[in-house]
Amino acid sequence: MFLHGYLSSKECFTSQIKYFSKFYRVTAFDFIGFGQSSPLTEPWAVGDYAAHAARLLSALGVRRGARLIAHSFGGRVALKLLSQDATLFKKAVLAGCAGIPPRRGFSYHCRVRAYRAVKKFAPHFAERKFGSAEYRTLSPVMRESYKKIVNEDLTPCLCKIRAEVLYVFGEKDAQTPLYMAEKLTKGTKGSALVVMPACGHFCFAEDPARFNAVAREFFR
Image (cartoon, rainbow, N blue to C red):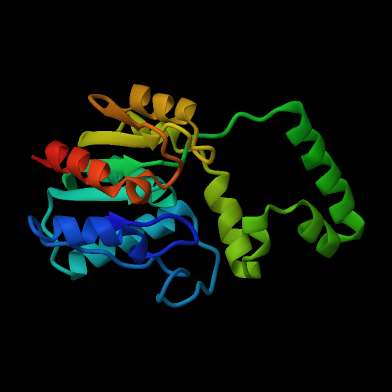
């Protein structure tokens, strides 16, 4: 089972799907609002995406104890699923997994205060001026969903996970830095961490041969 990242699609796993199809039945889909799936009609939180993924697994007849590969936002959904149902997945490889709150400096808090002040009298300008490049590309419904997703701290999920988890992070990942990987590994009992040299946030696509070998060995 593959769960892709935010503003991405199942095609990001092209190399992995081709490789793992030799050994397993592969299931990959586009989350609602992304790729070829229908757009969101209301803001979804991480839990909504997790519930949808669980329903899809059941509808497709995917057996319990399946193996999972997820990236970034897909990792958020994976953490929810793994913490809610101990039998859904036997093993999970989470690449560049999101869900840990980022460290915020003084400049960030100043920017937030400025945004809130400007939003009171010029909301549209505030959205254009202060929103991230990623945020500005989203529709109004997706923006509300994005806020729900990024503001949820998934740390409480970690202690509830019973499946075997391998975290794989790029050494140069700027979106989900290594301190997040360390917190995830420390909080998930029995988990392990592999750091891929010279790779960024999309380590599985930047060095697919190495990533596939690591995941394949873990799945054995």
